[in-house]
Each structure stands twice: as structure tokens, then as C-alpha cells.
Length: 263
Image 1 (cartoon, rainbow, N blue to C red):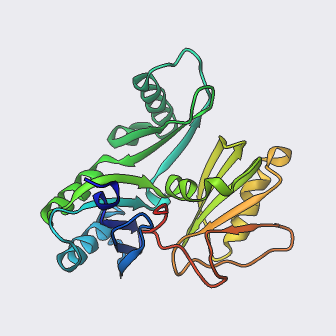
Image 2 (image 1 turned 60 degrees about the vertical axis):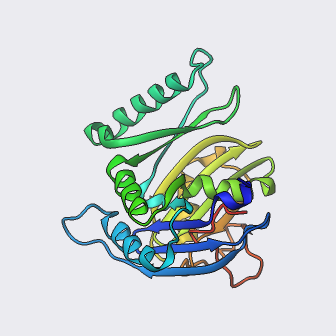
Image 3 (image 1 turned 180 degrees about the vertical axis):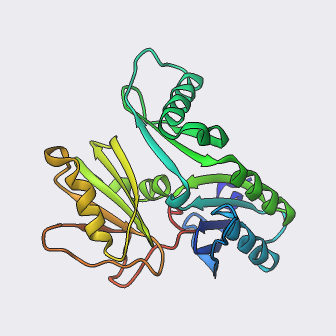
């Protein structure tokens, strides 16, 4: 099978919306159809339940049996950790155990219900780990399968965004992936991860980034790169916060959650 035809559906899941895109054939991977539906969490339900229910309803008209789907998951539902390089930790299983210990210590018993994955960051570099509610992944797989779809890839938004713009990042920088209500800030030095912070934010997302960078003091990178995700993501320039906006072919555009990382 051609790698260009393996992935036909892209899905973005967030607390307030579900984005879907159907890709055309060929190397440029453009969306030939896009659709978004709003959703809202209900009291007493898991925070991701409404998004899965909205996805189920949308797939009834959007999906085509036999397709593979890539799902981009909002940073609202992902926990991240940067684990220092340890030369004695050599295997993938050992890295996963190290990540599990970190999340257990940081979040307590809740972490027992999470699926943890690690990114291959190369020899000598700090490990990047992420954790997602296992029940959410199971529910997602079940809903895709009910519509004849296979989950080809599940990507945390920070990593999908980073993979999209990494060739634009040079030297020491802070990469802010911004979506409605949340800022996820990754500090990098020569394409190597130093730290990741994810926090809720109000309407002034630039201020939230500025406050987070202030906690790093003199260790904060000298440059800030910003990737805006979602049509409703507000942004205002701040004179005290020089920025470079990435992934924006024109000033009024935003990257949809579903298409983040698509190319």
C-alpha cells in the first residue's frame, strides 16, 4: 500500500470541539473535506466523554469503512514530562518504567489509569514522556471500530505541532502550542527538550506564556515561537514579548486541530 493512501481520516479531539478532515491522495496530503462539531462536558462525566460522543455522531456521515485514522489529542488531556538522560537506562522498557515512576510520584494513584508513551529523542538527550487516560483510548478505539476505522496513530498536540514546525526551530527557543483555554510551552536547545509546562489560560494567552517563561528566569530561551491551533484561538501581540508566529500562511489563519502535524 502506498504511504500516501494509508491515512485518509484525521481527527482532532478537544473539550469543546471535534475536528475531522478527509485527506486526498498524493504526497501533499491536503484536506478535501473538513467538518467540525461543538461539544461540552457534562457534570459527572469524564472530561473527554462529550468529545467521544460527538465524534461518534459525526463519523456516521463522515467515515468510510476501511480507512485508517490519525487522531490529534488536545493538550487539555495530556500530561507531559521531560526526564533527564540517564546512561544506565538503555532499553525502551526501562525508559517506560522511569516515566511510570515519575507520573506515579507526581500525580499519585490517578496515574495507575494512564497509558504512558515515550518519544525517541536520540542518544544523550532527555526523554519526553506523555500520559493519557487509558479509558479514553479504549473508548476512542471502540468508536472508530464501530464505523469501520482503524486507529493508525494517536498524537498529543504538542508533539504533532512540534513535528510540523521543527524545521523552523533553531538554537535555543520556547515553543508555545496555543489552543482555546490552554498553553503548552516546550523549552528547547538545539532541538533537544529541556522542559515542558502545560497550563490553563484565560483570554490573554500571551500573558500566560509570559508568566510561565518568568518562572524560568535567566534560563528562559531568548526567543518565543508560537503555533496557534483552532479557529477560536485568541491572540494579541505584546510589546514585551517578541514572538514569531508559525504555521500561518496569512495573518487571519489558524491550524485546525485535526490537520496539525499533517504536513
